[in-house]
Length: 174
Image (cartoon, rainbow, N blue to C red):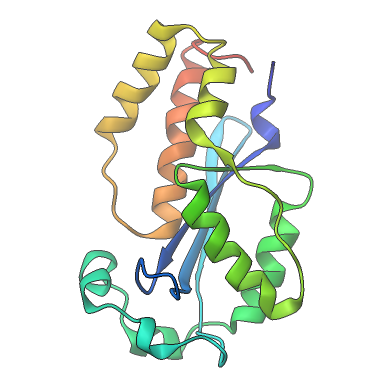
């Protein structure tokens, strides 16, 4: 299976916690366009229907996003519409699809929309590399050299950069 990289959009969320009642606080998208990685991200003001008690100070310590930052963020419904617009016609790729899809669902419920299915990064990479272990190892080695900042935009861009590394080095299918 050949997947054109211009159909891929990498998605990542930061959340208030990892609990069952958690909600998204930041979303990041990244894509490859004309041989470069482009990205977009937004903080998310919590929806009034989301449980404020789901907040975790431990999670806040990891991502560095405070509740006061979220009070100034765009409304969840506005962010949901932006995300759905950018995902349209693309293959959404996540390195944690179960978590990210749950937070995308929580976000898009604010506008009555169900998000598209997310595809696992490893599966997409396997298809791009056509199962060639040397290619896969090279891309994963490159991925390990890129710091994970635990912010949604840079984390999504990190995945796109790993794929771009493979494609520009001639290691994966276009």
